[in-house]
Image: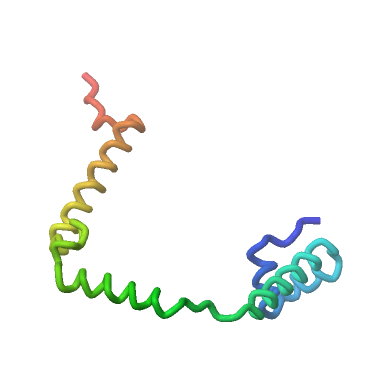
Amino acid sequence: MRHLNAETLARIADGPTTEAEAAHLGACDACRAEVAAYRAQGSALGALPDPSAPPEVWAGLETRLGGLRENPAARPLLARLPRPALQAAAAVVLFAAGALAGARAGGGGPAAPDA
């Protein structure tokens, strides 16, 4: 018997099943156990409190972000480049990578005509 994959089992844990999935779960202890484990894990994660950060963390983050806004020179180089320049650089990199991949795959160019 072929078991249901992890993606299907996780989906089943959160919602309804198809007829075929329900039939499989009725006959397969291992898949039923996996669905139960996914449900238990979801319940445990749902019971956790919302994450929170101390106020000083947010204050420090706001200070850093404000400093970057007021002093653009403090931003990383890529963040200071205009968008068209970044797009052009990305195009060059993609072209070069494609050319290199083609050369390594043996696509060295068109074949010479037969004489």
